[in-house]
Image (tube, rainbow, N blue to C red; front, side, top):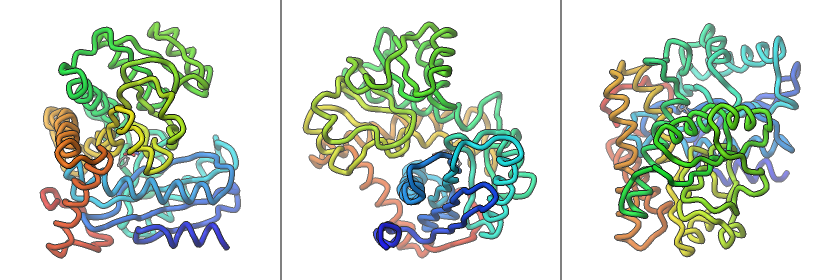
Amino acid sequence: MDAFTDALQGWDGEQVTCRFDRPTGTWIFIASHSTALGPACGGTRMRTYPRPLDGLTDALALGAAMTRKMAVAGLPCGGGKAVLAVPELLQGAAREGLLERYVDLVESLRGGFLTGPDMNIGAADLDLMAARSEHVFGTGAGVQEGRTISDATAIGTLAAIRACLRHRFGGDALRDRRVLVQGLGGVGGELVGLLVAAGARVLVSDVDATRQAELVGRLGVEPIDAADVLTTPCDVFAPCAIGGVIGPEDVATLAAPIVCGSANNPLRTAETADALGAAGILFAPDYVVNGGGALHAIGVETFGWSSSLVLERLEAIGDTLLEVFRLADAHGVSTAAAAERLAGERLAAARSTGAAGRHGATLVEGTA
Ligand code: PHE
């Protein structure tokens, strides 16, 4: 005592729900970071971690990022994230049992936490969870014209990449731009397809060799060794996997003028953002870039947005990003600090109108 108490004490969020799931040996952490703008909302991630503590710290940081993501996206929700820190990726009956017990725990929060997909949690898992809960996004019912939450996140990420190109090079054409996508899961894999369709020269990397080979074979993209992702020259480095992939010590050798991907919390430390700025590397803050999933989930499943409205909101992610870059230039701060300022303003406005702390409130359109 300890790293656990230190992690909890150092966190500025509202509540952590924690349970050890004995049948599977899984630590469950639900980090409800903020209900200032509405009920805490964020995906559920299944992952192995070196220690349970690493799962907790991941949940805490991811939950905080969700609060900023919702605020910047203009959604009337707070932020949270759930981590299922499993001893190994579970399948079959063990997986189903864990998900059922986990979603019962979510239900016990009575709408204070709403959840959906994240790393290693997909539509089949969410369908199973939704059979026992009304607080689950990303089921089959949430697919719009074939678009899932992951697809929407990829579309928003593409709009963000275009905004970066415009800011950095004066034009947003993707033709012959070299874009390196790290992580070929639900979002990264879809992003690769969009980039190829737009004429980009795409380089791909994944720790899962089979997944990488499949995409290389199907789309003719260029494979990159996991060890070489940061040092391979490209126009855009798009981290779309786990967080913490760029630390301050990587900045000197990073061979991309733009970092813009869908991964949550890709920077290892807060100082990394300043180091990137000092090196002249344009960093697109992750929670601005990857808000497309939340926009789609809440827009389609709660507000009943039309397909064209969803697409409009996904495209607008590019405009928000350009506004962040403008703020950063105007105030001489990092792009990360500028995005935080934007999120902070919206949260402060909600607090001053007394909207804070609506734990368990229902989602209402137009209140953010
Ligand atoms: N997990 C995704 C994210 O980090 C998408 C998501 C958002 C899922 C909101 C559910 C709710 O943004």
